[in-house]
Image: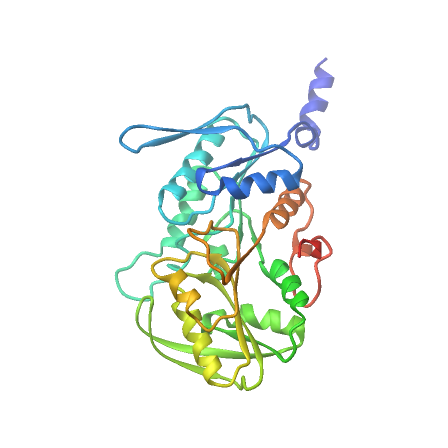
Length: 338
């Protein structure tokens, strides 16, 4: 009997084989988590968020998660309740003896505050990284961070998925001729360069100067766009001011058409009105954040398959590098979605 117990404790695969994957969702991303769970092949886990009359809330798991691989899906877009709800879910899972906790954050909020660009400001993205780790997350899975170096703010593994795996098949199916890729600002240059390299296409940069946040003073195009069909690529679309201004300037410089691809549709203020009245042919986004309203120029592409495959590979200790497109097509993702 003692020998059997020792063998049980010493077998490194026993716990993994006995545990299972359970996917739960916060209230802000349930629409996405349901599709991720369906693609993964398991029902979404049962969790309730009790709310008190003063607005205080309390996530409660409605099933045992002891020893399980728990994936908690929640984008941390505004309001900050989404972030705090995720932190409480992580804490509850840790106290419920979950075997391994992964915070799946399709949109990582506060990522634009990744450095001290002026005196006496917070580096909020580092603070959020500390909060997630302190709450008890063992791993973070996210998509298109505003700055890739934010991964270095974590002392736990970070799986940083790339939306180009979703955007590139869509662009290929458009069969656009005279294609040129454009970065709406200098900060997106590396992201755009990778996609341009894949298509063996040219690239231009829209260099902007701001008066203040969300307000552009001037914009200059670096490169020739005459007679070209332009594809703008960025990670976040907030007020859409930069994209719409870029589209206007590019058309003035002789571009035949301008369309934009942005991973996270924050879309605040007059964003929908700006996009509708802009020179953009279309704005293609991912479903990391739900749209607040419909717009004839906005098309939403699903991310559930990408996240489902990443979750499976994480659980099975397989590489997720096959999900990235850096000069080649992914052999994990299927272009039939488009």
